[in-house]
Length: 293
Ligand code: G4P
Image (cartoon, rainbow, N blue to C red; front, side, top):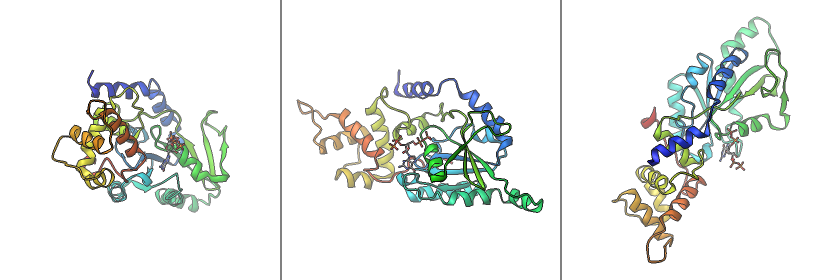
C-alpha cells in the first residue's frame, strides 16, 4: 500500500459512520440558530475544514475562526482573512491558548447579524439572545474556544424547547448563546494534500503512517516556503537537493547517526515533525490563499 493510500485509510478509519448523522443533526438544528461559527486551524485553513460545510449550513450567516493563530504565519493569516472577506464571510484570528482575538467574536456576531438585531429593535423585541452554532473538525479547538469565551460565567443550558436533551448549549451572556457541534464533523477525506497537511499538524495521529515519508513531504513544503526558518533552526543547509537528502543533512547536523555511519533518518523525521508541531522551527502556515483559494 502506498503512503497516500495508507493516509486515506487512516483518515477514513478515524471518522467512521457518524457522518450522515452529524450532517442531519446540524441541518435539523439550523432553524434554532442565527449564525454558524466555524473553527478551523489557521495553519491549514483549507484542510482544517469540513468539505461540505457550506452546503450543510446553506444561507446561514457564517463566521470563520482561524484558530491557533499563535502557531501560524501572521501575514498569511491576514491574507486568509481578507480572502474570506472578499467572499462576504467574516473571519477572525483567534488564539485560545492566550485568549487573543476572542473578544472580537461577540462584536463580529453582532456585525454579521446586524439586520436581525435591527429588526428585533424595530419590533420592540428585547432580551432575545443570539444563538450561534460552533462547528469544526476534531482538534481545531472548538472546546478551547467555548471555554475561553464562556470564561467563568460558563453555564450549560439544556432542555431548550425543540432541542433534544444532550445538545450542548452554553450561555455566554444575556445576548449570546453557543451550541456545540452536534456530532463529529469529518475533514477532507478524499483530498490527499489536505490529509497530509492534517497529519503534519498532528490532527491525524501518525502512528501507522510512514513518518519518514511524512517528514520528507513536510520538508518539501518548508524548503519552498520557509528556507530561512530551516536554516535558523538547523544551520547552513544546501537546498539544491531532494527533500530526503535535506532530511539527511538535518539528521547529520543533529548527530543522529547509526552504527556504521548511516544517518538515522527515522529519528530525524520524528524530530522534524515534533519541532514543526511545537513551533520550534517558527510560526508557519502550510496553506496560502494563493495556492488553495
Ligand atoms: P476540539 O474541541 O475542536 O476537538 O479541540 P480542543 O479544544 O480539544 O483543542 C485541541 C488541542 O488544540 C488542545 O491541545 C488545545 O489545547 C489546542 N488548542 C486549541 N486552541 C488553540 C490555540 O488557539 N492555540 C494553540 N497553540 N493550541 C490550541 P492538546 O494538546 O490536545 O491539549 P493541551 O495542550 O491543552 O494539553
